[in-house]
Amino acid sequence: MIEDIKKRALHRTSILEGQLRGIARMIESEEYCMDIITQSRAVQRSLESLNRLLLENHLRTHVTDMFEHGGDERDKAVDELLKAFDFDRK
Image (cartoon, rainbow, N blue to C red):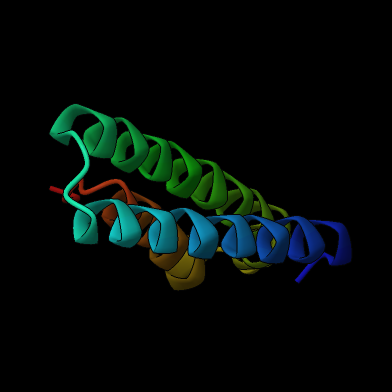
């Protein structure tokens, strides 16, 4: 894993842990539903941000190597990326 991306990804996971604990506390204390939803949506955005980092790392490392090998490896890389975005290769 690229060191800078790893550092940023770990930082984001720490933030996500805190956000999820906060949501659990909000539910426990029966806070206003819309406030909980707002926080839940923030977690979803944070997860998307984490996914972008992980995808960047994958593209810069594994996918690059797989494309250089060509053939079945290249096809596997394409299939993985399509699966990551819930697309099926036809």
